[in-house]
View (tube, helix red, strand yellow):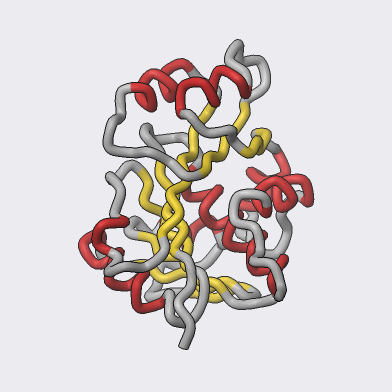
Length: 195
């Protein structure tokens, strides 16, 4: 058994798109590597994003979503890391990395180019992301440089897209994501180099 990376996705404020980005990054990684990945979700929203019923879990392609009780996220993620990469939708919960029993954890902050999101991110001392995703909304005054200056990490940019919204609304996100969305999110969790 090999130990795989746990990617822990966070938002400092609700509505950032954390669940969509977590699930999208899982699909992008699975597509890039051709290997199965796991998504651990404490609120079951990841099941809704892939169009699955609210059940004990669901698999679409190479991605399996595991809904778990919030207190069991670290244990479930650690156990699943023996099988492949794990994408944790931590939402607005604080970092869980200290509870992963020595596993490699990459913390990803999901934020919008919105003053309220950035103000909250600037005031959060407990979350120091390794990587970031900017869910960029058109018409906002704040740009990529503004976001980078506040969070201390150059973000991967994902534009708010009608295609993503339509795929989720139709329950087809696991099968039909816009290519530009996948390309951007593949940069967040790049496939390991082949030796």
